[in-house]
Image (tube, rainbow, N blue to C red; front, top):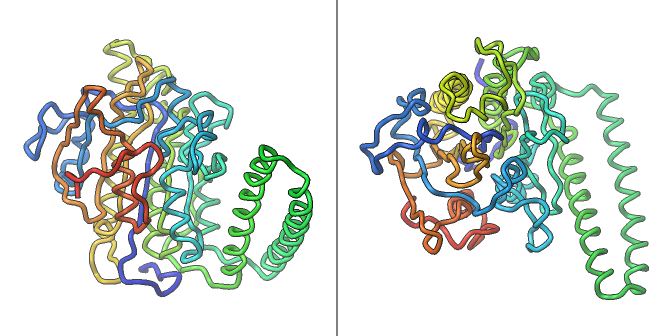
Length: 399
């Protein structure tokens, strides 16, 4: 049965999906040696061959940072979290900037999900999404939980409990706001700035509470699939992609970020060893081959996701991929050497002119920030911005 839309909206709203892993991709298996439209298809791009005309591969784009694992979380923001206070919008990630633009037009301004569990304190946890207050958005890591949130109706008691919680939280925020105004008069400049940061956080909570409450009694869309089970990485990753696709098609959200966990069940891929261990291959043929199995599974599932978006139709009858920007990559350029340079980045869909490998200058004084691509994407999404975070502008040669 085809999915029903959550609400009537513009015929073809723009969507954005960002997929990232914490351990990079083997560079010479991902980046083509030739540029332009006649590039050769490398090992990791072979699963995507049928979509060649629908995506672009980018070389030599990064955020000009270092730190190895400690720099990976900057993938969608361009900034490390400990540098965030020096920037007006902190280290807000691209997906959350887009989600702010969507606001209450959809039930969920964004979805942040992971294809498996990783402890937040784990060095190789995939932290993709960040708010403008510098807070990492915790992902939904169980497919069953995501399905229930998207498509299962709350019973009457649950709706009453949520409404009561919204009212109670609203009252607390009102009290905090009143006390803060009295306190502000007694503070010096530095303390007022700190208080303003705090109040910005409070206003963000208020905004989200208002959005959630507005959708409380609106029916969720009906889809023709049953609730999934949670059976390890190999099954969870494709299911998460399927649920994201349905969420986009039903206009339950227009923004999603999907993180690949740094700890996965490699046994299911016929391997013995950890994902992290394989990433430190040191050019060992055995470890490198194992890593490529893991990475090719990822690109194959992304290819499957693109196929699904092509098959799904938008409100105007066009393939959903035409109005969905799908980014795939990592904040790690080379896991074996812990390099955060030359990040592996691929962008599909979204109405851009695709089909090429675009390579950018490597000399430092001519480098192009990855955030320039993000600025281009945000502008296509409808966000009014001249540059996103560390960007110097857009990518005028890509459009």
